[in-house]
Length: 476
Ligand code: NBP
Image (cartoon, rainbow, N blue to C red; front, top):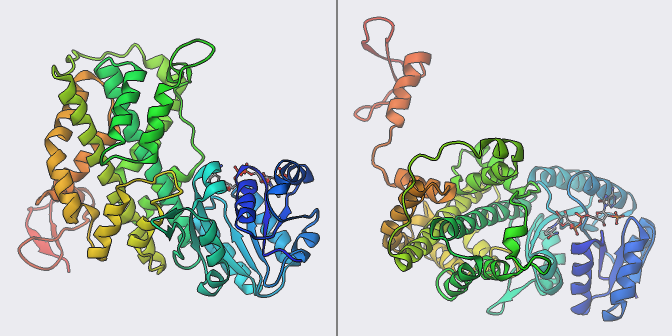
């Protein structure tokens, strides 16, 4: 019998998703550029379900029932284009290609249009959850034509994670929408990890605590409103002891954070859309600073100025850090959802933010109890101007504000960098300000570039004759 689904690209992600499909009773056709990966998968896990081994692309598509459904799990960029090209040459009208890699959404828009011209259906599906999620249930964000979703959606929903009986997979919208929201998901993940890092650093360098003790703090935090996958695994990583040296693992790991690009893409897209995603941007830049090893080693001799002692009441300060983390995290999510809403408007995707929060509750790296709050906020008001204006978030930030301010000021006085905490509170203060110094910026722009300004008291566009008698003229 033929396979209901084919997976090509059998590295970490592809092989685990192929097994996940098989575990759910589907017959899965397997394909990989080099046959070694296909055979390794069959050797180790071939008995877990019904697999069909194929070597060539032609054999692969011949093994599939029509309309054919193929999931591509190869490296994003040129390899994905190469595989799509090979597949399109042997597929027939009505067949469906799903790209499950971390593709850039603009590539997905281009590919979807090119495939539609050839009569093929193309779905760009963001898949989160890493290796473990791929095997046991990821969060899946598919974008593409509704008719193709009807054909593959039920299968994707079945293999996705489930929370309270609901699948962590839903049709996001047309063409690049799935990869766009996956990109922002990763950006939020960057911000979340940076905030966790800053909280750790404040306890480590600020309060002089040991990693094992800080691990206990995170484990405790994971019992409350911060409950999330990332906080849970932070406790585990901090508790890990290096077998070779007997030191905490975190002390023997090189402190230079890598990145593969999705955080940077999130910030680039936000710049183009004009949406401030300060938490995510600070996280991307913090990784860049950590990796600037030559500059860093040259700069260790730079002066610190007089540094303050840590706050006297250690328990109070730890609680302040917890609240600062929670408030900053709310800002990062609010900003990420703003970017999604702007992208959705720009490309006419009609993304439903509440549905998105729902499918991020399980399977993915940013899964957190807190996402229920986001879902509820959009259920109450789908046109929320900002997540921070939903009653739960308004109250939660308000009750954390004093702690948040103490943490950011103490950090600066102690010389501990907190770029994400600090930019988040500044964003919050900016957002709630009745007047911003942008009025002065407009005055300066008008002075040197005749860029004009609007007045608060009457309609129209104005310019002051700065180089002449400084009278005001109306230009529009
Ligand atoms: P990789 O991103 O490491 O890609 C390896 C696969 O790409 C292999 O199957 C390789 O075939 C194939 N490939 C390459 Br490279 N160039 C090719 C070409 N020109 N033609 C055909 N096949 C080619 O695998 P991964 O880490 O499993 O990730 C797969 C996708 O899922 C990526 O887009 C990734 O960004 C995304 N993703 C990864 C994670 C994660 O946690 N790792 C999470 C979520 C999403 P070969 O065996 O013949 O070399």
